[in-house]
Image (cartoon, rainbow, N blue to C red; front, side):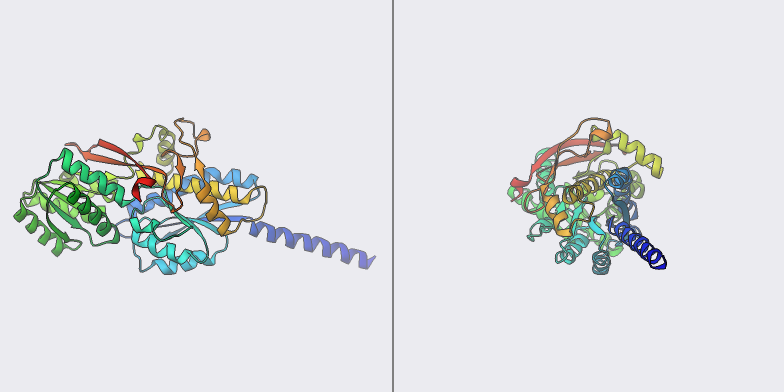
Length: 398
């Protein structure tokens, strides 16, 4: 009798241990990497929040499949120096099957390299550096158009719409700014638009020097490649110095914090963006309502793309898992991301739509097959107006 009881208890204990192990193995984590402190906190938080909404909405569906879905967020402070440690921490957590991020191209570059041996899937909602899809990585993809697409669209606008006689080009000395400005200048050269000067400016002293050189050049357009924190300082300094040249930039200026920092100096600013206003997407109203309810502020385009990047990643994880209740491997998830084919959706009913920004599928290099670039302009009351929309095919970027 005693032996029978001991046997039954052993079986109960073994079952409990197996169930505990199964519960741990069934936890799927998605990580986000973006600036959550420092000057880029406002836009970096949009990455986290967009992903957070997607995870919250899909948690019940994953639970029904036998998985607990969790989101964990990492603050990179927009620093490539911090990226290696963040990458090591993420790779060490075997339950992380995919990453949404980073915001900055320089950070994405470091993290993607570190994820290579682990074959950990990574989808950036915002990194536009051209080189990111030129490394032969099978685990890196992005849902936004690259700098080359912005450079083409911006150069077209400067030549055809602004009809500029000359342009001063300024980078904020980041990988993003340097890449964007180089592509722009190459395309301005094709259109025979002279570049009066090219310089870097990211410190107060450099900005002051840039203002002097712009004034001396009498250029019609000042093109800035960089993020909104430096861009707002530069345009305010230019306007304070009496410079009236059109100020144009890339998607680094597509953030509510740019106008908060620039104030009235933001009037008339033109920028190319891979994001655009949220209301430009026909089925974004429900997302905007849910975002505002959760965070008490309006979303920017970055949040929308982070939401779509996360849903794309979750779709790939489901496909990789199949009918199994065990975790798919990271390699299987990366392969599934490249096979994703989510259709465009124009319904306001979120239960019928997998994406907000349109159809999502990727080329062999991780570039989105069809993306778009918008040229925006802040009017006199600081409202963004669409000036031009351009669709970009991945094939055309080769």
